[in-house]
Image (cartoon, rainbow over all chains, first blue to last red; front, side, top):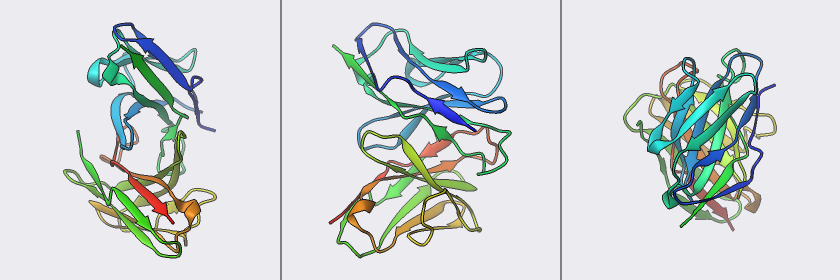
Length: 117
Length: 117
């Protein structure tokens, strides 16, 4: 079965400090992994994805994520946090080998990032 | 990135009435569209997947007669909440996938806040 875990409900970080939002996954095959951000009362915005290739993926707004197959993780990172980064972040996985459900995305529970001035 | 719109952004209705929510992909053709429901401080719950011109595939536990989905064209999908009740109050988000490949990211609409009195 496919699943995604975001172990932290909330992450607090001071502006200018590096941030990490954790994500681990479970799929039967090689995963397609995604990060999305949601601002209050808004839909989700795509940040980045890993399909294949380099384990370090760079995305929008200075975010990056590292795919670690041995640890089945895809943590989101940013070298220097901004107050405007405060939002809800979702990790998602799609198993391309899963034949049912039109390859649907499975979302983690979300992690609220709070960046303090 | 690709743009997905939803209308209305907010709707308040009386119990027993039906509400239609539209989802449009503005600058691309979406073969597949998804409808999600998001409860406060919770992750997205996939309700159904629809492909243009065919019947929607509903997730387990989602009543197809309650939540009618139509995907009549490559740019428009509608979700109709029939005989709405207060427990249907939620944030509904649609998503459209760019292209048919499972590696393609999904683009999300801004969401519709439904309040049933």
